[in-house]
Length: 163
Image (cartoon, rainbow, N blue to C red):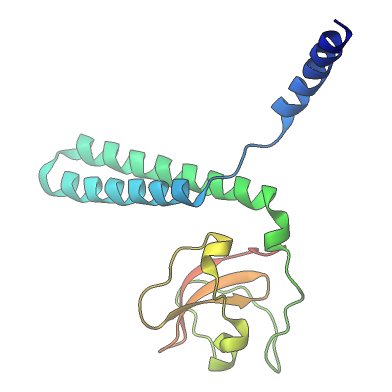
């Protein structure tokens, strides 16, 4: 009887603590499913533009926005619960390096996207797969930048990616 009472007391004390813990992060399979859902939503928007009326297009766009927002929130939850993955060493840029925020279309000098700055394990950081061929994820300060290595142009930017 005593063991039963102690177990019941422990369960009541642990239950509120478990309710307060942050949401669990998504598995890779769930991330993949979310990405497929967004791709389906994009297809639905294209079809609504081609064959639907304004209401259909508006509804398809709204659904796409909501799914993208949900994926961003899931990624933020993952990032907050796996903080150690996004805490890396100090960034040492090329000679004469001076950080300045960049946007899509900015052209980097080749020294900034050399092998020393590549992020080879993009899946570890839940980054999308770079385009086939000449695109690479590169660390630039605490940012992560997708660069077309043929031209040095920025394709995508995630500011304040690393802690």
